[in-house]
Image 1 (cartoon, rainbow, N blue to C red):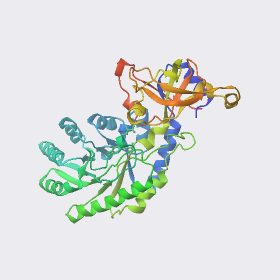
Image 2: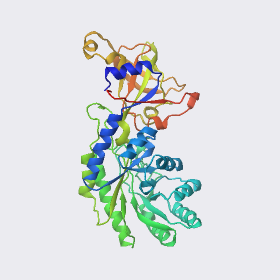
Image 3: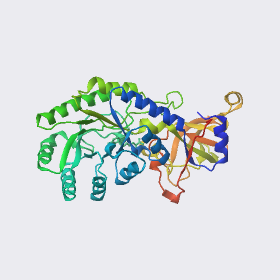
Length: 394
Ligand code: LLP
């Protein structure tokens, strides 16, 4: 929801840009912190969702840890004040350079995705006379019931170690003197809204921790990953994800032993609703079969619709200011809302019903705070998309 002051400010600015509503971000972080603190759960923010500096600074202020998937993310987390004891390094393909840098930084834990990776981290730690703390990422074969492209916890996915390889993992852990086993890690997918899925995950985690304990390993950390979804259809009426129900499922179904810590790696649910991509209509093309709104933003600024058929609300801010006049006087038309990139897939959505739109109108593409700005590219040698932040009164 944008007030007239905000839209007035947008009119003065060059488009496209990501607009961050820092108030929404703060409220979301407050809700997550309150709901997780009730059970003593630890949240690491999955930085891959958004590493905009101001976003990172605010998340860090709330005391969350950081879940990183590259050496540069580890570096950025530390630069933005995340405590090294709360930095986790995950990812299926960590390079030696990245592992060495993380060892030098004394981060909390490596989430390890293969037996070979365990051996490499052991060798690199040994060469530095250090002990690397590791958690084993297990592929639990739990279906996340989300989009195929963002499902990660099935046997067919490249992530994690499959359960039939656990004996090999146990042997490697026993043989690797420079590793300290901390616990087990899971992540089954993203944009998960069905809480039953998490219940299934809890049952698998309980089985897996029993397996490790039965084989002589003390499990200190249960890391459940991330994945909590947001409401892409109702950004104004359902802005904050249901953190209460989410954490309650884990409290109800996970067996937490004395001294164990439960960790979460939320990305999307913390940041998605705090940003919109603001763009202008460059051209209106009225075809025989279709009307097109050609925007000055495209897949180079926001690739989610093109990559995952993801849905985002689209609003014409220049025609929505006054609801009454909109209802009385405006014609509504269906448009394919497209970008300027030389690719047919460069379309944000087809058949979007909008008030009749004109060159220069401001268009907001909502719920783009997660996997938006961070997935921008320089394709077509486009300018880097800018960021604008809310000011008081907005
Ligand atoms: N932990 C691990 C190991 C992950 O791979 C991910 C996300 C997360 C945590 C955070 O998941 P979240 O809470 O944000 O769902 N670009 C895609 C999403 C890719 C998610 C990759 N992994 C999208 O735009 O939908």
